Length: 262
Ligand SMILES: Nc1ncnc2c1ncn2[C@@H]1O[C@H](COP(=O)(O)OP(=O)(O)OP(=O)(O)O)[C@@H](O)[C@H]1O
Ligand SMILES: [Mg+2]
Image 1: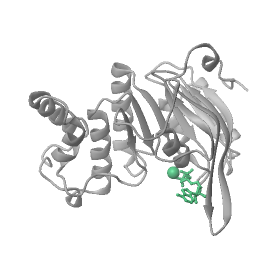
Image 2: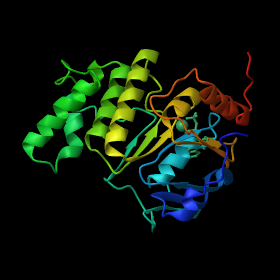
Image 3: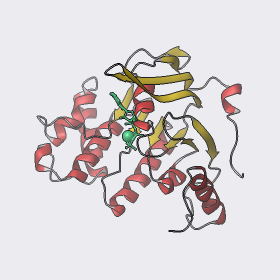
Image 4: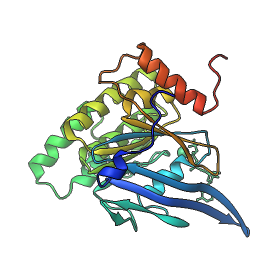
């Protein structure tokens, strides 16, 4: 199938992040549930990788393990060749469930990760990222005063303001309306094209993945494996009605076992 390939890049250069025979299982009441089954992935430096898969297959588990919040049952995650043993402030994680600090204002939330910067640069970034996500006028508001979508935008602003080496984003635009979601995708691409951070982005939206990613990793049902890697070799901005776009999108849908027509 067009666009499907093995990960040759991983064999030639040291990847930014790799998973090696990564397996994660959860135990409860003496019963073990395998969630991730021998995941082998390599993500290049500056790459934008999207991960798609059925609900409950283990996407959030994979991302949390990559970011160091969960320990593998066996196998390893490596970043820059070093085994990951825990979270690191140079890597930022945007959780699927909202993770803003309720006791800090909008400004305070964005400022939180910028403590190491001089005051003037802190101010500049706070103003810039508040504008970027359209939260002007809400600088002094607390999260309880914001809508769900505004909280999500705040969380993305907080992550981007740090300009981290790696960004782990777990369905960051999931609860936004379709117009805001498009704006946020464009902004994320603009920032990534300028900064070239390595981004691993989980989404259940195939279109979102094909619009954003260099490559899309398709996960199988639980216990999840990587059942295919699809390279999206289309320049940005991408024409979502072009035959190459539609072919890649349909290829991923087929891998996920989704019908073309409903
Ligand atoms: N801390 C945990 N303890 C026990 N089981 C867990 C834990 N976290 C996740 N699981 C189980 O692992 C499986 C995968 O969950 P995960 O949240 O990674 O899926 P997901 O692909 O992100 O789903 P969704 O698309 O709904 O966000 C589920 O069956 C879930 O019940
Ligand atoms: Mg999830």
